Length: 451
Image 1 (cartoon, one colour):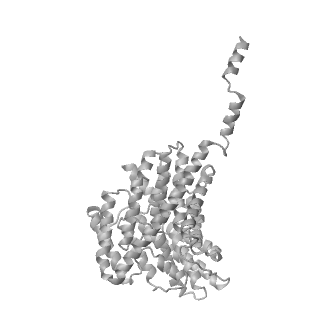
Image 2: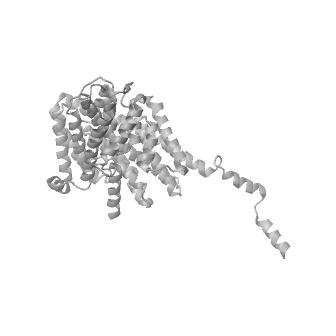
Image 3: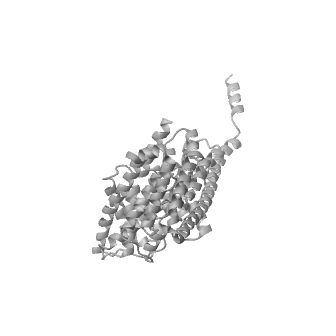
């Protein structure tokens, strides 16, 4: 009997060659399952990079078209801006519901969702297409918005759709693809791969997961390579070789950090407060007539633009780049008017990001402070103002310092930028206790749970 049991066990056991083959298939270098996952990340990253570059080109075209129009007929903004804002609001509510806002809070929220159907609904390709089209419409109307937030959501949506098509079973793999898509979008849109990696860790996921980090980081690098191959090795805000000399010029660090962080905190507090509902007459008008309210916001943006001589329209890219490269000067009121235009654009409910406008506000803020601290170079003050205000807005100090450094090729300023960024984040938290994107993502999750 024992001999019969042994012989039956021997018959059931796979041959040694088959066992060796199975063990070989489990090795990371030859596992078909792991290679399928890698190819999904890599191909998705290439697609995200291509879409991000195309979106950037169209956004630049939309902004330039509006500027050419109002440069010939400035008062035409009083008609074009309200019309574009109203149309964007109407399409957001009827054709592309869920496309409103920046896009980054939505991506952060999906990383904390467990329902695959809900994630697919938030990161649908339909919403991604609407995000692109409506952001372009907002820029065509002179809105003080950027494309970076929408690019993050579009990248995450592409990766989510790819994960669905490939039927990837593990939730952590799907989350990693969403994370990689958002970060690759930042890397490709601004040619800042290092900032994309830091953004994924510090802002989107708030953690570093060893099991999926390799594929995520590779996807971000691929997105940057796609940008490098198609548009060249450029820096978004130009090139600066400025440095902050040791000595009294370092007084610029705490000055910019504290004041810029407080201003950024006020801006974040206003956006968080607006997301919960506007007070008084504005709130009632938004609830009853959202399209009319968006048109009114467009009119306010046009009036602010006319008062500033057209400086506050669009992303603010040209103004910030001109300050960094020392080719232009701006009035001291620029950072205030640009901040107001950005708040109004956000409150209108049209899709659009705040990265580029916030960096432009910070550049104007630094240039204004430079008048009170002549011992510090103007270019250094502009960079410190950018990182201080942006850190105050997003409360992600490493991301802020790295993105400003990469966008300006400002390696000489990395230590002052890091110091300013951390101090500004602390100052911002005195006013706005929670990071902006985290607070907006938390509110978005609450809204989705009530539906």
